[in-house]
Length: 500
Image (spheres, rainbow, N blue to C red):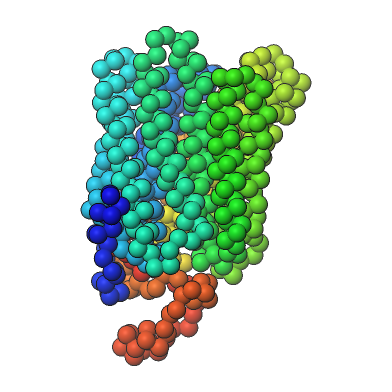
């Protein structure tokens, strides 16, 4: 019923000139993501890392404070970017109107308001149980925003003339995981906040936190970026387009593997470590499907078109492969390397390395996810403004700072299993990453403040999409009979009713 109501807000497309509207929605979501990462996200994380390094322990910080920072990163930095792209980037790509644009903008304020309430009050539940109520109210507001997003995107895609394409499945799956993890996260937070004693709290964390992180990192963030990459990289850089059969197979295997990892993680805790083999098999299936998909693009081969953002894309996907390789090597690290080199370490004694597992997550969340947002956001910002996409490159310094900080953090965090001297080494890495994100954030903030210098043009170049039917003669005539400009391989999009 809701889809039917939303669909009525998306009538047939008006003439092209009516579809070129200011990119206020895109700017709102993108700036919200930037504001989050530079405050509650990377900035708060850098401060927490300094405190961890000073104490020499990753468990020296309150669980609620650590999870509040992680919540801000997932719902604010990643979540707002994902929602913005799902609304405006996808609508522009499909050349359709966004269903219910006012509700889409309302979902931003719901998400932002819920995010602030949850992030600010969650750490305070350790001191006052009354803070649980506004924190939970924030979670319910976030769930409402995410549910609205899923309904609006579904209604928007129903009006797409070409219907769903293979890569759209990744975007829709990511949105489904966004909703699932939002509900799971609220229930999990309430359970930890109401834990009667520390033993109960530790059991809750051990049993239920890892599945939540899998939903957020591999379900929401990774699937969305894989979908965006299939939709955009061939158009931007001339990379190989993914064969539909391969895309469908990869999507099925990734979700199957992810479901297996989540179920295996829970069963290992509830039914014994005999389920570890099933967990590992599922992780390998997921990793293999991702690697096969990424390598099919020829991402590290020479491309017909290049810009500075391509280096970010390549570096980001290298970090994705590093994180998946580390995940596959987890048994070797835990049961061979640690007992051999650090038999007296806490990780060897308890049979699990929080430091190594955290390093895997940092490699994918910062090295891959954050760096891909850096690479993609400015480019899409240019698209929806109708500006030259190949002239909207990001600065060099974030590339160096983000990768240097991430490398020190990943290697140094794993090294803490072997020597406490690694703690002061990783201490400044968060500040280095924050500096890189700040330089990029200021650049994109200023970029979204400028007016486009030229009119938007059709999104898809005929040479890249065989289904495109671009009448060059009619286009020349509509431009006051001026001769057409020789093609440069660049083709910015028509802007839909709103943007990312």
